[in-house]
Image 1 (tube, rainbow, N blue to C red):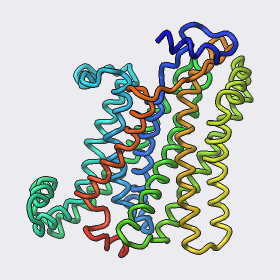
Image 2 (cartoon, rainbow, N blue to C red; image 1 turned 135 degrees about the vertical axis):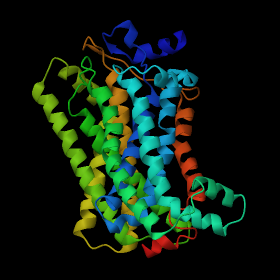
Image 3 (cartoon, rainbow, N blue to C red; image 1 turned 120 degrees about the vertical axis):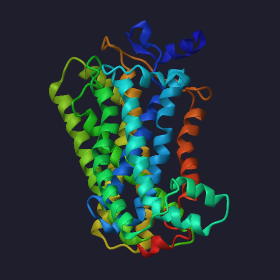
Length: 398
């Protein structure tokens, strides 16, 4: 610890308090809102099919739900790892503290996982699980039969009930998804002592950036998985999903711009140190990666796609580059909020720095493992619950 603080001292400028030399919320806390945001965004994309009847994006429906589930299963791991006592996490359910926003996350998470996502996925797959269990051999027969909860009713009346239940759960799921990620923004926005975080727009900015990241990651996965299955990408679906992504990016950009203008207009005593923070410590991650590469360039590409009539292959390439840049931009947003908010002194007269560890629970390698883990879980889910039917034909038919 002493050695680490000694290494940080030459990079500290101005006057800061002793307890501000080291940044306490590190990379794990950056990963947490990033992963949670993808859950909310993927579910919102899925809701377009069942609630808003957008048939063009139906090939993405099951993939969106499974993506949301894979990322939701990983979402609490960064927090639990950071807190250091993951095996005691169940105590928040036994002794609920309604005055603690952090503790209430457990209930929001449990509601979203158990009541919304798992139930919706079960109704989506119930008929297929029954059919697959009849056609397959063990052990997949046992797995699918168990997942169907040993249901065998595929009558018209039962399927009609499934459709109604699906729509009802999806409608409930939309505000639940908003609550799940709006809550993350609420945690930061409600810290009044920190001018970088304290903003009434913070939950809304988090919410729309979550939608952007979720939609972008589903498009990315679709463009990777479908060619791997040896099938053709549905361009009508891709164009429609990209259109929703385009509008979400515009709203997200507008909200962030509004938040920026509001901070300048207020010009409180913190404005000078925040300006130094942006121009010195966060210039690369905020100006270059978040605003330029993660926002303006993707917006420019999508405007060009809409203006010019490009061929399918070129549009695919541009969409692919766009969704990757958007992921870089959204991750940079989380970085700038979490890390940036701890890099200036409460005296408003000095800046500290963040030295990332490579190994250990707060290190780069562990965080990368947490970011890769949802894709591993998604691969397993897709093996058990194919998103486009067992051979992928449904994707083409849709």
